[in-house]
Length: 216
Ligand code: GDP
Ligand code: MG
Image 1 (spheres, helix red, strand yellow):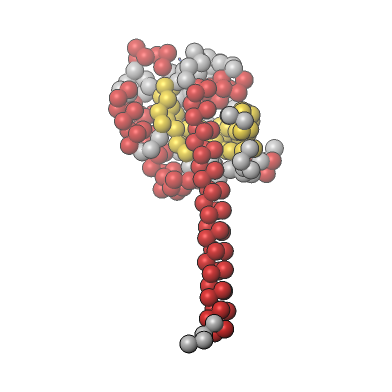
Image 2: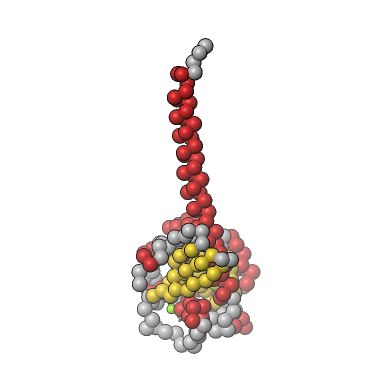
C-alpha cells in the first residue's frame, strides 16, 4: 500500500489522513508501542527481522474520522541511516527514549533539532519516555524530560508498551494536534484567498468609477 491511499494531511473538516513516524534509538520500544496501540500485543523479544512498514489505525475524535498511518523503522536507526526521506512528509513524530537509558534521551534531542531544522513547525512533536514499568532503573529524571519537552513545544508522555500505559492518550493527543494544524492550514488558505479577492474588487471599482464621477 502506498501513501497515495491517503495523502498525508488531507482533510475535509470531517475526514483526516495523517502520517506519523516513530523515531528513536534502537531497542527503546518503538515497534512495541505501535504493536500495543494497533493490535494490543506485546512481545518480550526484540524482533530484528521486522521490515520497515506502517500500520493503519482509524480513530474517531468528536465526530472527526482520523486515519493514522503509523510508520515503523526496520532497525536502520542502529546504523544512523534514517534520512529525511523517511520523515519528510510526516504530520507528526513520536520521539521515543527508554527511561533506563540516558543516551537514548540524548538521541531524542538530536531528533528534535533535525526535525525542527528540516520541517519547522509543520510537524507535531511528541516525546515518549517508554518502559515506565522499569521505574526502579530510571536514569532520566522526570522533571528534566518534561521541562525539555516543554522548551521545544512538544508534549511529554510516560509510557509502557509492556503494561499498556499512556499509549492511547499519547496517540489521541498527537492526533488532536494534527487535526488542529490541518484545520488552521485550511483556514489560512481560505483567508488569504478571500483577502486577495476583496482587494481586487475594491481596486477595480475605484479605477472604473473615478473618471465617470468627476463632475467638479
Ligand atoms: P525498537 O528497536 O525501538 O523497535 O524496540 P522494540 O519494540 O523492539 O523493543 C526492544 C525491547 O524492549 C524488546 O525486548 C521489548 O520487549 C522491550 N520493551 C519494549 N517496550 C517495553 C516496555 O514498555 N517495558 C519493558 N520492560 N520492556 C519493553
Ligand atoms: Mg523496531
